[in-house]
Structures are given as C-alpha cells and as structure tokens.
Image (tube, rainbow, N blue to C red; front, side, top):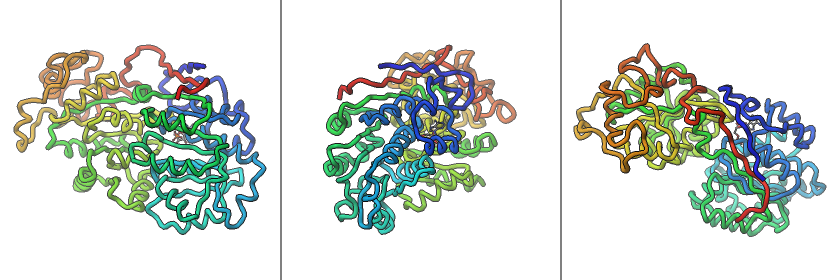
Length: 496
Ligand code: AMP
C-alpha cells in the first residue's frame, strides 16, 4: 500500500498545517490517558510515521521503520507500547522485589538518545502508572541495578551497559513482550551489532519487534529479516525532503579567516540557538575557545568529554543558557533539541550524508531552519559532492572577508581546487568553482539572477547571513516550483 501525503507550502511551522493527514490522534484508538498526554504536549496531528505506524503497532504487528530522528518516530513506537503495556494483564510479577525484568526494551546507540527516549516515555506515560528506567554506560551502575531489582515496565538502554548488567545477572529479558531496536544503522556504525545479536538471543521468541533505521545497508537488512516476523514497512522523510525545508547558503572564506567570520556572523541576533559543526574534537574545542576570546560564550560537545560534561553542555543548550554549541558529527548524533535556529558548518563534512544529518538539526518537528556552510579552498570538492547529493546549488553569501586571503596560506591565492567531476552545476559548469570564488571577490555573478545574493560588501546593513537572499527561512530557494509532496509507504510483507 502506498499513501501520498500532500504537504502544504504555506511557510508555517506547525505540524498540523504542514501535513494534510487524513487522520487525527482521536482516530488512532489510543486510550484517554495517552490522549491526555498528547494534549499536554500540544500535539495536534500525528506526523506521517505516527499516522502510518501506530494502527499496525496497536494490532501487534512487527514493524520495519525507515525513518530518522526528527520525524516523530519516538511517539510512533512509545504510544502503542504504552497502550499495550497498560492493557496487559501480567503486571504484578514485574513489580515484585527482585524482579529484574522489563516488559518492553528500547535499545538505542547513544546515551543522549537513551535519555531522550526515557523522557518521552515519561511525558507520554504521564497519566499511566508505568515504571521506566534508563540504562547506559559512563555512570555508576548501582541506581540502574536498584531500579531493575524493583522491576520495570519500560527499559531504555544502550547495548554495552545492558549486556554488562545482563552478564552480571541484574537484568533478564526472558519475559519481554516488546522490543524496539532504534537507529539500527548507527548501531552498526558504532560496532554494536554483535552485542545486539547477543541481547536478542536471550529474548522470548513470542514478542512484538520494531526496527528503525535511517538507511538500510545489507547487514541491517539481514538483521531485520532474522528478528522481524512479517513486518509492516513504513518509510518516511528521505533526507532530501528534510533538506528542502532548510534555507541553505555557503560562504567562501579563506581558512585563516574562518573564526573571524564566525564571530562576525554570530553578531546577528536572529541567530538565537546555533549548532556549529567542526570536523575534529580538537577543532571543536579550538572554535569554542576562540569564540570566547571574541566575547562570544560557547560550549563544545564531543566524545572526549565526560558524560557529565556532555550532559551539562546539552542542558545549557537546551535551556537556552548556551547560545552557541560547537559539536563534532559523532557527538551531535544524540542531540535532539527543538528550536535550533541555525546550523553553521564551520568545517564542511567529508561525507555528503553527514551534511544532511547536520542541517537536519535545525528543522525539527516540521520547523524550518537555516544552515550556513563555510567553505575554504580545500573544501571545494566536499561542497561539490554535497550539492550533488542534495540536488541543489547552494546560494553564495557575501561577507566582510570575501576575497581576503590569509598570508599564511599562499597556495590558496592561486584559486580553489577544481571539482572532481565536471558539469551538473548550472551556475558553475566547467569553471564553476572559480566563478563562485570570483563572485565572492565581487567581480562576477556566479549565480543565476534568481539566486543572486546581493552586491559585494552589502553587509553590514544589507542582507544578513542568517537569512540568505533576504528571504525568511520559510521562503528559501525552491527547486520544484510547485506543491511539495512526501511519500509514505506502508504495508505488505517486507522483502527482507
Ligand atoms: P523524534 O523524531 O521522535 O525525535 O521527534 C522529534 C520532535 O518532534 C520531538 O521534539 C517531539 O516532541 C516532536 N513531535 C513528535 N510528534 C509530534 C506531533 N505529532 N506534533 C508535534 N510535535 C511532535
């Protein structure tokens, strides 16, 4: 079965106005305590994955969900799980002293995601009496062991610590009725698949299983076929769809001027909450430190920081106390924070898919966002690949350092490296990269008229980098020229 959902192009950010979905939450046969929790959260309309997945999950079906964080997938599985648990008869034994068992397990790759999923279960289950606990490494195990001793309804865990506690005899999965494997492709990337298989081997065969993954590499397809029974397949939001909602631009800048440009860009008060991406942990620290020298408070988050330092940085960012958070790709994987107004790629990622994941942080919950990428002479090839994958050409924004070349890097005065392949970029065919550079130096017009970003040196006082082309975020350059659509497919037997 294939269902098409027309998306309005009104430029508003509310879910209910973005998706004309034929059902509402009241059609979803969720009991009153859950409906009340949805009202508490001000959710009006199910997101496509919720609309598609919840009815099947309430029927007890297994599910293969191709979806990434930001699509509303947590509620898509949490709501039917809570409904199921609330209706299950066999509750008391899970609450007996020494129970050590859980009724539902959500396995997720990072601590941050585990905490966020735990918080979602708390919110959605606010009017039900469910016990939940979150288990992850990097912190003392005693509170987790104590919580398991009392028995829990919902256990959210990362694989390493879960396996550890299972091997110590503190957790048993032999009475599990629902299992969710979240972000399966990241599990694979992070080397957890072996642990996942060991964990699954201890579960009862009779259970409901859900697997979510943003992509479907061969190993995940194999895993899916071994743990899912006759699953429904639901697929939402291919990366390019998310990308369309984000107003994107590029600033050509010499490497030696990046930090000064960043400090200048951040003067814009419209940049209320910004995630800045650096390629390395060391680079992330350096950017945060140098911003402090420019009197711009910033925090950094990356894998070398302790769990408590990472949590503190995230909390500061979430609460609004920290306006600028500098992150690496890996550290940002667990970040799910609404209201990020801007993403700035201080360094361009080497892999185009990372670009899509990065900028997706500013388009949460149907909101539209702004992404600005700095591109130095050595990064032109990365930009070329990004534009190819996202099938858009990024408008070039002028700035105070356009055309300036730092004396320490004389090789860049000779101009940028040509792209790996030719053609395909309407404004930059053949000598495209050079044209882009020339425009940033104020000598030419690299972009078609519709995408031109205004005369050189217009800033300050002209268009702000936060809103390329003087457009509001919701009015960013459109590629399709017409009503946008999103395709959601569900049903049938999975081919895996
Ligand atoms: P997720 O993909 O589960 O991480 O959800 C992304 C964000 O969307 C979270 O901040 C949720 O609170 C929010 N969200 C999920 N479902 C809805 C909905 N139906 N209406 C509005 N916001 C939602």
